[in-house]
Image (cartoon, rainbow, N blue to C red; front, side, top):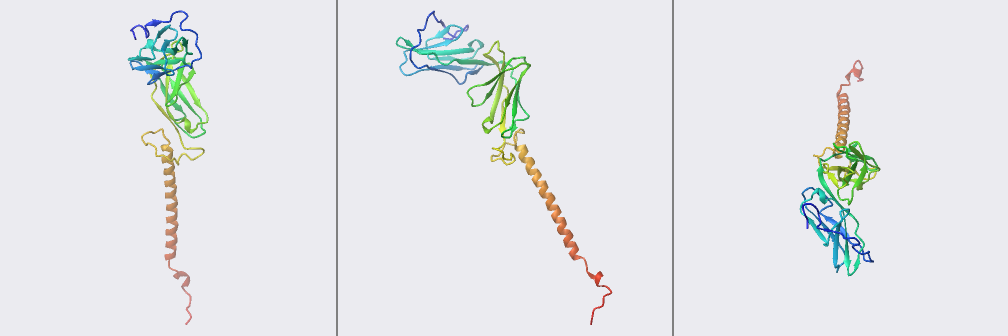
Length: 271
C-alpha cells in the first residue's frame, strides 16, 4: 500500500526479523530503471529461490516495510527516493538481506550540460575529458554511459566536474549523459543532460580518414569531417598533377610542330 505521506504502511518491530540463516540471499531490482523521473512509474521486485514463504521489502533508515515481493509505484515522488533492501523467510529462518538498491528521483533540478574536450571524435589511444556543468553549486556529479549498469560519480565543486578518459579504446564509444545533485540529498538528482555521442575513429593506429562504416553527415562532430577533408586534399593534388602533365604534353607537342628550315637556309644541296 502506498500512502500520500510515505511508501509503506508498516514499521519494523524491535528484534524482527530473526537472525539470518544459511539461505541464499535474494536479489532486488527496479524496472525499468533505478533512475526514475518524477511522476513516472517504477516497479521494485525481490527475487529468491522457489518455495519462499514470505518476502519482506524495507526502505532503509525509515523503519518502514511491506511483506511482499513486488512493490509498484505508479508515480515517482521525492519521498519515495532512497535505499531499499529485501529478504525472505522459509519456515523460521530468514535469508541474508539483498544488496542495497538506490532508487533515485531525477528531474528534481534543471539539467546540466555535457561536453567533450577537445571534441567528441577521438582517435584510439587518445585522451578526452567529459565535462558536466550545472547552473547550481552542486558538489556531486554522476556520468552514465548507455548500456552500463552503474554511474561514474565524482565529488566536485564550482558548478562542474571533469571525467577524464585516458587511452581511449573502441569500448569507450557510446552515448553519455550526466546528472548533478547535492550530497545533502543524495537520491534527488537533476534531469539528465542532453546526450553526448563519443566516437572512436577507427581501430589501432589506422588513419581515421579510412573508416569501414559510412557516417551520418548530419552530425558535424563525427569523423566525417576528416573523411571529407582527406578526399578534398587528394582531389586537389590530383588536379594539380594533371594540370602540370597536360602543360608538359602541350609544350612538347608545340615544339615538335615548329619548322626546322632556319638551320637549312644558305646550305647547298648537292646535285
